[in-house]
Amino acid sequence: MRHLQRSLAVLIFSMTCSFISFGQEEKVTPKDSLIHIVNDYYRLNVIVFQSDSSPKDVENIFDLFTPDFVYVHPKYGGTYSRDDLYNGYLRNQKNGGYDGSVTDIIIANMITGLNAVTVTKHFVNKQEDGSSKKGEPQMTLFEFKGGKISKIFEYW
Image (spheres, rainbow, N blue to C red):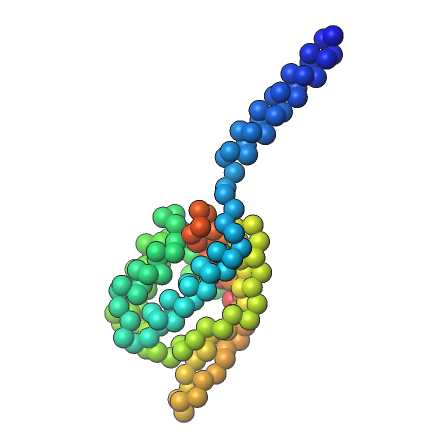
């Protein structure tokens, strides 16, 4: 009888823990939504990269991010908070860093996972003779929380 009571207690405890942890798990954003958000991110960046872009164009990108968003690019300075990155965009915009030389971003491959997307992309740059040239492939990882981008990690 004691063995049965102990087994029943363990079963009830296990079920309770399962329900508690299940309720606290991060909700999974559907893969189609993740793909749409990544496509929007790149589309909005191409707009910002033009010489006539405005601070509102930058704000449109940041509407896609969580409040605790982090951008990681080890080759170009490491880790940036949301505020650091936002101020960098505005500084580049004010200083003429966005001159229209990036005319497009081509997504060559996209793999979706559990609240994450990896992308292989190419920047398309305007050449001096007016033609366009597709740049080298670059890899980026996007992580999501609550349907927004929480982290971007650049592997190029």
